[in-house]
Image 1: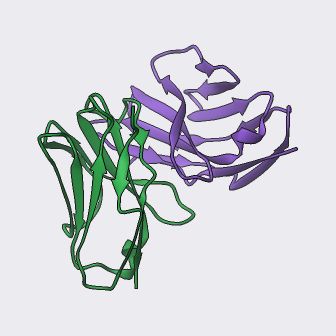
Image 2: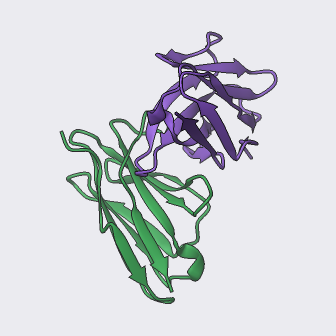
Length: 114
Length: 114
Protein backbone atom coordinates (compact mmCIF):
# COMPACT_ATOMS: atom_id res chain seq x y z
CA UNK A 1 0.00 0.00 0.00
CA UNK A 2 1.15 3.52 -0.73
CA UNK A 3 2.10 5.71 2.19
CA UNK A 4 1.09 9.31 2.74
CA UNK A 5 1.86 11.38 -0.33
CA UNK A 6 2.35 15.12 -0.53
CA UNK A 7 2.68 17.50 -3.44
CA UNK A 8 4.59 19.39 -4.50
CA UNK A 9 7.94 18.28 -3.08
CA UNK A 10 9.47 21.72 -3.24
CA UNK A 11 7.98 25.15 -3.79
CA UNK A 12 9.42 28.65 -4.07
CA UNK A 13 7.15 31.65 -3.58
CA UNK A 14 7.58 35.36 -2.95
CA UNK A 15 6.24 37.37 -0.05
CA UNK A 16 2.54 38.18 -0.31
CA UNK A 17 1.71 35.25 -2.55
CA UNK A 18 -0.65 32.40 -1.81
CA UNK A 19 0.24 28.69 -1.67
CA UNK A 20 -1.74 25.43 -1.66
CA UNK A 21 -0.18 22.22 -0.42
CA UNK A 22 -1.79 18.84 -0.98
CA UNK A 23 -1.86 15.59 0.95
CA UNK A 24 -3.26 12.14 0.24
CA UNK A 25 -3.60 9.89 3.29
CA UNK A 26 -3.00 6.18 3.50
CA UNK A 27 -5.94 4.26 2.07
CA UNK A 28 -8.53 3.75 4.82
CA UNK A 29 -7.27 6.58 7.00
CA UNK A 30 -9.90 9.20 7.73
CA UNK A 31 -7.83 11.75 9.60
CA UNK A 32 -5.21 14.17 8.32
CA UNK A 33 -3.00 16.46 10.37
CA UNK A 34 -0.72 19.26 9.21
CA UNK A 35 2.53 20.36 10.84
CA UNK A 36 5.06 23.10 10.16
CA UNK A 37 8.71 22.22 10.77
CA UNK A 38 11.11 25.14 10.71
CA UNK A 39 14.75 24.17 10.20
CA UNK A 40 16.31 22.97 13.43
CA UNK A 41 13.03 22.73 15.33
CA UNK A 42 10.38 20.14 16.03
CA UNK A 43 7.13 20.06 14.09
CA UNK A 44 4.45 22.52 15.17
CA UNK A 45 0.83 21.36 14.96
CA UNK A 46 -1.31 23.41 12.58
CA UNK A 47 -4.59 21.49 12.01
CA UNK A 48 -6.25 18.13 12.29
CA UNK A 49 -9.22 17.08 10.18
CA UNK A 50 -11.37 14.01 10.62
CA UNK A 51 -14.30 13.13 8.38
CA UNK A 52 -14.02 16.58 6.76
CA UNK A 53 -14.40 18.41 10.06
CA UNK A 54 -11.72 20.39 11.88
CA UNK A 55 -10.85 18.56 15.10
CA UNK A 56 -7.90 20.64 16.29
CA UNK A 57 -6.11 23.88 15.54
CA UNK A 58 -2.68 25.07 16.57
CA UNK A 59 -1.50 28.62 17.29
CA UNK A 60 -1.27 29.82 13.72
CA UNK A 61 -2.75 33.00 12.21
CA UNK A 62 -5.88 33.04 10.10
CA UNK A 63 -3.69 33.18 6.99
CA UNK A 64 -3.47 29.41 7.43
CA UNK A 65 -6.52 27.38 6.47
CA UNK A 66 -7.20 23.80 5.47
CA UNK A 67 -9.91 21.52 4.30
CA UNK A 68 -10.53 17.83 3.83
CA UNK A 69 -12.31 16.34 0.86
CA UNK A 70 -14.80 13.42 0.67
CA UNK A 71 -11.93 11.10 -0.39
CA UNK A 72 -10.08 12.19 2.81
CA UNK A 73 -7.34 14.04 0.95
CA UNK A 74 -6.53 17.47 2.27
CA UNK A 75 -5.25 20.89 1.27
CA UNK A 76 -3.37 23.41 3.36
CA UNK A 77 -3.64 27.00 2.18
CA UNK A 78 -1.44 29.86 3.28
CA UNK A 79 -2.26 33.43 2.23
CA UNK A 80 -0.09 36.53 2.25
CA UNK A 81 3.13 34.57 2.63
CA UNK A 82 5.81 35.88 4.96
CA UNK A 83 9.50 35.03 5.02
CA UNK A 84 8.87 33.21 8.31
CA UNK A 85 6.54 30.77 6.58
CA UNK A 86 9.57 29.10 4.99
CA UNK A 87 9.56 25.59 6.40
CA UNK A 88 8.95 21.92 5.76
CA UNK A 89 5.22 21.24 5.86
CA UNK A 90 4.37 17.74 6.99
CA UNK A 91 1.12 15.91 6.55
CA UNK A 92 0.24 12.89 8.68
CA UNK A 93 -2.67 10.50 8.46
CA UNK A 94 -4.28 8.22 11.02
CA UNK A 95 -7.25 5.92 10.99
CA UNK A 96 -9.00 7.64 13.87
CA UNK A 97 -9.28 11.19 15.12
CA UNK A 98 -7.07 12.35 17.96
CA UNK A 99 -3.37 12.96 17.47
CA UNK A 100 -2.63 10.41 20.20
CA UNK A 101 -3.28 7.75 17.59
CA UNK A 102 -0.23 6.64 15.64
CA UNK A 103 0.31 9.07 12.83
CA UNK A 104 1.93 8.17 9.53
CA UNK A 105 3.87 11.04 8.06
CA UNK A 106 4.46 12.00 4.48
CA UNK A 107 7.81 13.18 3.10
CA UNK A 108 6.81 16.83 3.39
CA UNK A 109 6.70 19.87 1.14
CA UNK A 110 9.66 22.24 1.39
CA UNK A 111 8.34 25.80 1.05
CA UNK A 112 10.78 28.65 0.51
CA UNK A 113 9.48 32.21 0.66
CA UNK A 114 11.74 34.86 -0.90
CA UNK B 1 0.45 25.10 28.69
CA UNK B 2 2.25 21.88 28.00
CA UNK B 3 5.91 21.97 27.06
CA UNK B 4 8.39 19.32 25.94
CA UNK B 5 12.12 19.77 26.48
CA UNK B 6 14.94 17.80 24.89
CA UNK B 7 18.20 19.08 26.36
CA UNK B 8 20.58 17.08 24.15
CA UNK B 9 20.78 18.66 20.68
CA UNK B 10 23.25 16.03 19.45
CA UNK B 11 24.50 12.65 20.60
CA UNK B 12 26.86 10.06 19.23
CA UNK B 13 27.13 6.33 19.94
CA UNK B 14 29.22 3.47 18.63
CA UNK B 15 27.51 0.69 16.74
CA UNK B 16 26.24 -2.09 19.07
CA UNK B 17 26.40 0.20 22.12
CA UNK B 18 23.46 1.51 24.16
CA UNK B 19 22.39 5.13 24.21
CA UNK B 20 19.76 7.04 26.18
CA UNK B 21 17.98 10.15 24.92
CA UNK B 22 16.39 12.46 27.47
CA UNK B 23 13.04 14.20 27.47
CA UNK B 24 11.19 16.15 30.11
CA UNK B 25 7.74 17.65 29.91
CA UNK B 26 5.48 19.89 31.87
CA UNK B 27 1.74 19.44 32.21
CA UNK B 28 -1.08 19.67 34.70
CA UNK B 29 -3.00 16.87 32.97
CA UNK B 30 -3.37 13.58 34.81
CA UNK B 31 -3.78 11.43 31.74
CA UNK B 32 -1.79 11.87 28.58
CA UNK B 33 0.34 10.11 25.99
CA UNK B 34 4.04 10.36 25.28
CA UNK B 35 5.81 9.42 22.08
CA UNK B 36 9.20 9.11 20.50
CA UNK B 37 9.26 9.77 16.77
CA UNK B 38 12.27 9.19 14.52
CA UNK B 39 13.05 11.34 11.49
CA UNK B 40 15.84 9.80 9.36
CA UNK B 41 17.81 11.93 6.90
CA UNK B 42 15.21 11.17 4.20
CA UNK B 43 12.76 13.19 6.38
CA UNK B 44 9.84 10.74 6.70
CA UNK B 45 8.92 10.67 10.38
CA UNK B 46 7.99 7.33 11.94
CA UNK B 47 6.68 6.38 15.37
CA UNK B 48 9.23 4.54 17.52
CA UNK B 49 7.35 3.98 20.75
CA UNK B 50 4.33 5.21 22.69
CA UNK B 51 3.54 5.37 26.40
CA UNK B 52 0.19 6.00 28.04
CA UNK B 53 0.58 7.88 31.30
CA UNK B 54 -1.85 5.72 33.26
CA UNK B 55 0.20 2.61 32.50
CA UNK B 56 2.96 2.13 35.04
CA UNK B 57 4.85 -0.42 32.95
CA UNK B 58 7.46 1.07 30.66
CA UNK B 59 6.81 0.50 26.97
CA UNK B 60 9.26 -1.58 24.92
CA UNK B 61 9.55 -2.21 21.18
CA UNK B 62 12.37 -4.59 20.31
CA UNK B 63 15.62 -2.65 20.87
CA UNK B 64 13.77 0.47 22.00
CA UNK B 65 12.51 1.01 25.53
CA UNK B 66 11.48 3.95 27.64
CA UNK B 67 12.03 4.99 31.23
CA UNK B 68 8.84 6.80 32.19
CA UNK B 69 9.03 8.66 35.50
CA UNK B 70 5.63 10.29 35.93
CA UNK B 71 6.38 12.18 39.14
CA UNK B 72 9.57 13.60 37.67
CA UNK B 73 7.85 14.24 34.31
CA UNK B 74 10.66 12.46 32.54
CA UNK B 75 10.45 10.19 29.49
CA UNK B 76 13.78 8.91 28.21
CA UNK B 77 14.39 6.59 25.26
CA UNK B 78 16.95 3.80 25.46
CA UNK B 79 18.26 2.28 22.26
CA UNK B 80 20.10 -1.00 22.76
CA UNK B 81 22.50 -2.59 20.27
CA UNK B 82 22.60 0.61 18.20
CA UNK B 83 22.63 0.14 14.44
CA UNK B 84 23.75 2.46 11.65
CA UNK B 85 20.10 2.75 10.57
CA UNK B 86 19.28 4.33 13.92
CA UNK B 87 21.03 7.51 12.78
CA UNK B 88 18.27 10.11 12.75
CA UNK B 89 16.67 13.03 14.52
CA UNK B 90 14.59 11.81 17.45
CA UNK B 91 11.64 13.83 18.68
CA UNK B 92 9.85 13.44 21.97
CA UNK B 93 6.15 14.38 21.77
CA UNK B 94 3.28 14.90 24.20
CA UNK B 95 -0.47 14.61 23.81
CA UNK B 96 -2.91 15.59 26.53
CA UNK B 97 -5.97 17.66 27.25
CA UNK B 98 -8.83 18.69 25.03
CA UNK B 99 -6.90 20.64 22.42
CA UNK B 100 -6.01 17.56 20.34
CA UNK B 101 -2.51 18.94 19.77
CA UNK B 102 0.57 16.78 19.51
CA UNK B 103 3.44 18.85 20.95
CA UNK B 104 6.98 18.05 19.86
CA UNK B 105 10.31 18.82 21.48
CA UNK B 106 13.20 20.35 19.54
CA UNK B 107 14.78 17.00 18.81
CA UNK B 108 18.04 15.15 19.41
CA UNK B 109 20.26 14.32 16.46
CA UNK B 110 21.70 10.84 17.03
CA UNK B 111 24.69 9.68 15.03
CA UNK B 112 25.62 6.00 15.17
CA UNK B 113 29.31 5.54 14.36
CA UNK B 114 30.68 2.36 12.76
